[in-house]
Image 1 (spheres, one colour):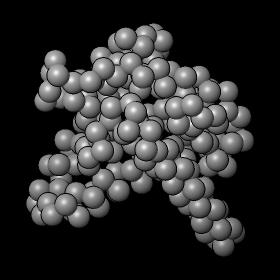
Image 2 (cartoon, one colour):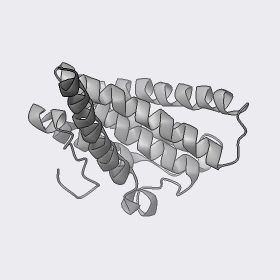
Image 3 (cartoon, rainbow, N blue to C red):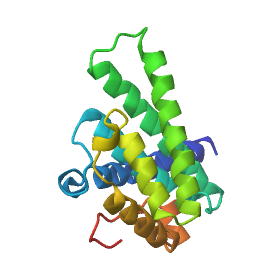
Length: 181
């Protein structure tokens, strides 16, 4: 019985690692940075990974318990990754919790604002939220984000059709603009 528990834990870890790697790869797709005005910076990559994870989490909220458990483990992996990245950037141990709290707040704020727009299927509202979050300092000079907003709406629609078996096995793929799942 005990060995079955450890085997199951290892199996779940493999699923989570596979799914997180696929989501990370999707967020790193060059088209977002080259054609859809996401800055290719540390914060730009944080924004894209957050965006991809939000789409994934919105899909898994309709999943059975195992799909939601995988999603929770992916949240944990994401914040472990963020913690590691902050440390690599040279932030000392005492500064990490403050930065983590700020980045977590940013992530959950984005989840809320993007969800409102996606629930309404409002691309204009979504583009506005993306522009405000991805370019917080530039105001009127920020690029338009309609292309990215359109991709998000289309990606969410495709994700909603993904079979539950794909979710629980960690095989969800989020296609880049112009791609298919």
